[in-house]
Length: 73
Image 1 (cartoon, rainbow, N blue to C red):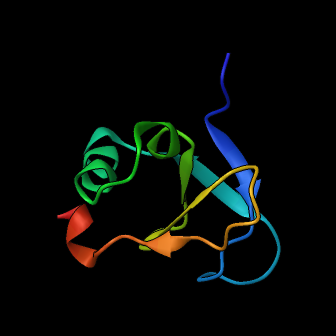
Image 2 (cartoon, rainbow, N blue to C red):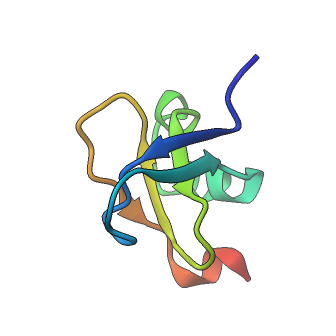
Image 3 (spheres, rainbow, N blue to C red):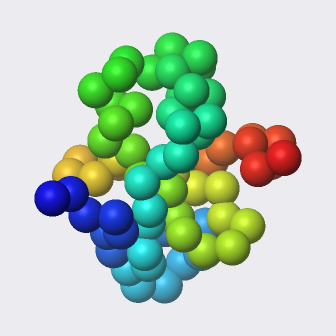
């Protein structure tokens, strides 16, 4: 069984660890279209806070990046 949420640090929200969720299909498609390799796409998690666009990889020293605002349209 795989986790649905992980507690990771969000550079946008600040503070301590916050819940991150697995990416939805349209978010994965966006990263793949940007040229991210499939193994990295499946390792990404998105901050679960309302309106936060930050995503990051679990298990690496990686600060994360942000989706464009249009991703939630």
